[in-house]
Amino acid sequence: LNPNDANAYFQRGTTYLENGANKHAIQDFETAIKLNPQNAYTYLNHAAAKINIDDYNGVLFDYNKSIELDSSIYQSFVLRGGLKIEFKNYEGALTDFNKAIQLNPKDTLIYLQRGYLYELMEDYSHALTDFNRIIAFNPKIPKAFSLRGWVKYKQHNYKEAINDYNKAIELDPSRANCYCNRGHCKWELGDREGACSDFSIASKLGYKEAENSLKLHCR
Image (cartoon, rainbow, N blue to C red; front, side, top):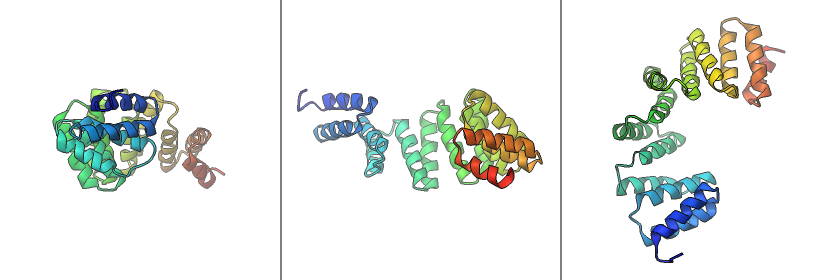
């Protein structure tokens, strides 16, 4: 390994990152940054390795620096938007997701994240618009149905929410939260037996909230 070759450290760091050796990856990316502080992707990968070990110190700086160096990388805006959600900076996250969509309007997963953000902001109309767009483009994404179902539950539209949870479970039967949330919809509609059955399935799949619902409603 050439000790003066930033790209060599970047490539090795990326290999470490892909194989889960995050601390080694961080060391290589930091060396690459010292040798060449102008590579936007090095900052992105450095941030990814730090997040993998739950070290958020400096991650926002990495995203900011990546965008400063190359504002055409839409993933930087997506990742920074996701981090801003964690910090409850919802307006900042929305700005980043909008920019990411402007750069790459064909990536449906950005709409998924923006829809989730709208749900957190209790802007259910825009959330549904984004989830509908994803489902129309690709009806095989269980999380899109799950999130749309949750918005419909919040709107007290329990029957349509159940339809979405049914589809999410059909696509991915391991989604414990969907059974639990479907159970809450059934409970609201007076279907105690169906609700308790869903809570039971979710509990067996390890979903803690379902255990509480079983104790509250079914025992």
